[in-house]
Picture (cartoon, one colour):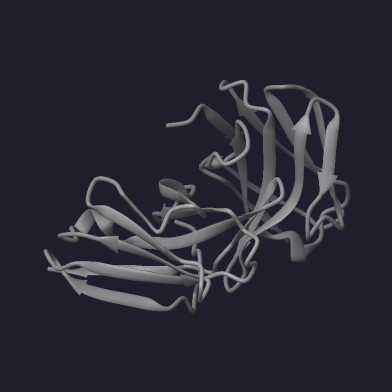
Length: 112
Length: 110
C-alpha cells in the first residue's frame, strides 16, 4: 500500500464547529489531493496541492480550506462545519504526470 | 463500511466467468486513464492504467481497452473471483487533476 495515513478515521461533530482532517504521506510525492465521496456523486475534488505552500481549488471548495507547510502533510479544514459536509473524505497522492493517484482509506465525517 | 453509491449500476456475474465494465469519458483531449477498485470501507485501489497512444493494455487477469473514437473505456476481468466483488470506476486525467466516473458495482455470484 502507498504510504498514506488519514486521521482521524471517524469523527462526529456538531454544526458550527471547526474540523481539521490530516493526510500524511511517507512517499515524498509532489501532488496531494482532497476528495469527498457521496452517494450519487462519486469522487469530487475539494482542493489539491502541487508543492509546499502551493494549493488550488477543486470543484467543491466552498466551505473548505487547506494547508501544506511540509511535503508530507496536507490538512483539510472546515472552518464552520455544516450538515451538508457530512461525507467520506479521501486523500490521494501522486508523484508526477501520467502516474496514478494513490488513495488513503478515508475519513468518515458526520456533522449533526 | 461506507456506501459508495446507493444507486450504482450493478453487474452480476457467475464466479469463473469474465466481467466487462464500461466507462464513457467526455474530453477527447484526455491522454491518460485509470481504473480503480473500491471495497467497502476502503479507499480506491489502483488496478491498471492506459495512455491515449495505446488501445489495449493487459495486467494480471485484467485488460483495459480504450476506444478514442467513441470516447469509451472498458475493464475486462478474466475468471472473476469472489474477491473481485467491489465498486469499479474509471478516471480520466485533465491537466493535473482527474475526473472520476460514478462507478459500477460488481457482484460475483457463487
